[in-house]
Length: 196
Image 1 (cartoon, rainbow, N blue to C red):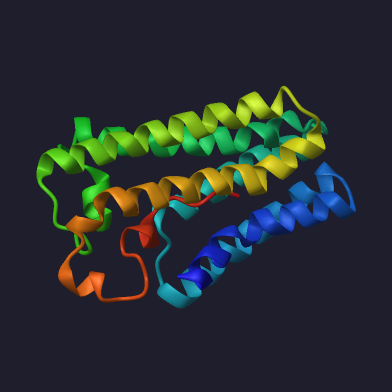
Image 2 (spheres, helix red, strand yellow):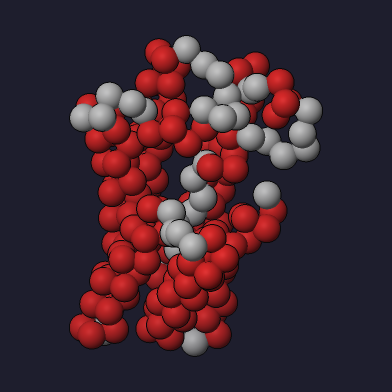
């Protein structure tokens, strides 16, 4: 579990370090390279890449390239918001079109809940990603660039972990028996982490 968290976060950690050592443009280049490496490693190890990584990679490539091309950090500041809102849209789409909550597809091996609760949990994820995206923009345009970079790593990651912990605490009784005996919390394995 801790390895997965580090793997998910290492592009944004490298972005943070590069920013502190250099500037937003070097940090953006490092972020692009880290996301390409991350996706490549996934493909080499698993022979497949989950949708979240592809969405993140696409957004990093587009908004990172625009940031470097136009020498304008606003593009990379928008990237976390766009990714979060796309993910919110995917979760909502799963409810309104497919009629099967995406969160159920992700977690049903670890949890056994009534359909009505799966629907509520899916809506909670939709709102989490919408509000995370809005929070990113609010911070990006109300504080210094350096403070936004801090928020990108610590604030958005903190929000993600708080959301995951709240899920575990509220829904623990629905964990399947074999998962209750394990050290790793089941729902958090597929839960949201801060997007690079």
